[in-house]
Image (cartoon, rainbow, N blue to C red; front, side):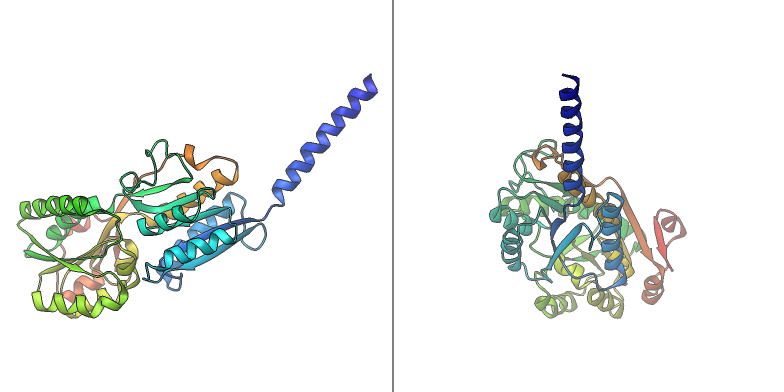
Length: 331
């Protein structure tokens, strides 16, 4: 009897060791649909933050991790194509950003976990049942960017008190329906009027439309630009910043990377924090957690970045009291 018990014990240990070896030697596959390749310093460091956090969790690309990367580069119609391709590759998780991308991934699979990379209104878009209990195969990070327009206008007005007419350069990536969009427009206009500012809306949906958008801005002659958080605007961050400097127009953007590219300032969630959090979600899924039970996160840290080199080029003197409010000043 003792011999049998000893045999069963060693057998159980062997099974555990074998199972552990199988888990540790598995090669995980991440499907990643991004906006643009990490070909500039400000985008490379986001990719590096993502990979570093994955390595902290024990996943190293080229060893036990494969990342299938796809980039839309301003072409929204590529989301369904890339989502379907990643499903065919049978990746273990799909990471994707704006609402059209999440919608395409949701339509492509009901099985593979989907991690949202900062997606606007995931409840209203029908991606999750609630932030606390998503349900289905989607979780990740929600995006509060559309709610930040009043704050960005306030900061822009504080840095450049003389402005009264702002061109809001936006795209159609938020996933809002007509009613939601109209409500949001009214809220933004009300906030702007309280600051003594009026908003002119300029549509920029794809990189091909930049000349038309610039022509509209040139024709309307606004005092400042407000750049919405859209994949197209992120791709065109250098072109938009250079145009604004040439025209001596103060610009408020939504991400630090845009201020680094030359915008006067930016205010928004920390992209580094977000990319590291994506790796945390992936790790939880790889370790067996179901996306339906992993709460959707919302940004908790927002950063104001000011580019003093751009301010000098604009001939703009930023009040020292305003500079003290900045999380980072680029000189």
